[in-house]
Image (cartoon, rainbow, N blue to C red):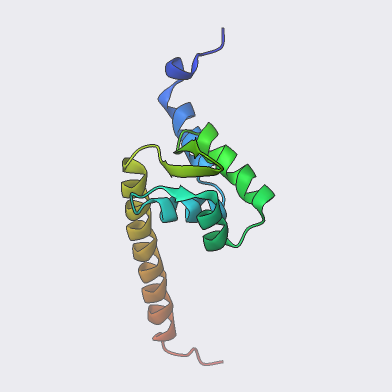
Length: 119
C-alpha cells in the first residue's frame, strides 16, 4: 500500500527536499527568494540568465518539492519561499561549505609545509 504524501517516512521526505535542491540554478533561485520578497519570473530570468523554458522547469521542481509557492497577478507570476526555514537552511549550508573549504585549504597548506623527501 503506497504512502500518502503526509504518511511518507521522514527519510523519503528529506530525499525529496534534497532532490529539489540538487541543481545549482534551483539553489540560486532559492537564494534570490531568501530576501523574503516576492519576485516575478522576469526578475528571476534576469538574475539567473536562464532561458524562460529552463527556468520554468526549475520552478516546477521547486514547487513540486514544496520549496516555493507562486501566485499569478495579471500577466505576472510572483514567487516566494514556501517556508522561511528554507532561507535558514541555505545559510546553514553556506556555513558548512565555508568550513569545508577552509579545512581543505588548511590541509593543502599542511601538505605544502612538509619537508621534501630525498631521492
